[in-house]
Image (tube, rainbow, N blue to C red):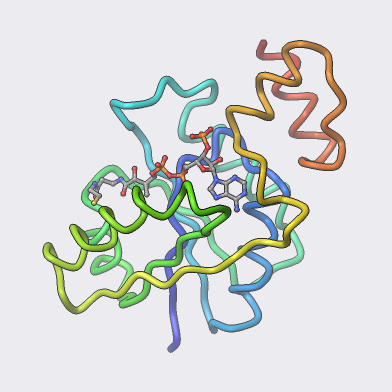
Length: 158
Ligand code: COA
């Protein structure tokens, strides 16, 4: 089976992430969306189960996509899921250096696993979960960037 992992924080999921997931679901037999449980560089607004449920509720029409929480090295999660492919989205040149470092470190950790990059639709290349939360907190309109149910959850939490 042709299986890939799409890892991230997803705090919360946006249309930009969903765009990548939809593209991958057409290419791979199975896509595992991997939600990182903890990341000591980030203070999450939502816990891992909430982030997982928000993804699941936004993606109910994709039978070959499954959402799982992990709390290990990404390459170990890929091995556990029997996948040799990690998908990362590249939005702009500014993503490149960080992604380059991660891809090479992951390759060093496990050379059997490759990172592949995919571009989301250009209408989502300027957004991130933090930007979405900031605009929502200040009362801005973000309906073009995330499902209504997700925006409501962020508003309620903030
Ligand atoms: N649309 C919208 N936003 C996008 C996006 C897209 N297509 N692709 C990325 N982003 C945004 C995210 O919303 C996120 O925004 P934020 O920083 O405001 O929250 C940002 O880009 C990058 O986040 P993300 O893609 O979630 O990656 P991350 O930097 O949080 O890292 C892991 C997540 C899981 C990949 C990383 O923590 C990891 O690998 N952890 C496991 C431990 C490990 O193996 N470490 C060694 C790695 S070499």
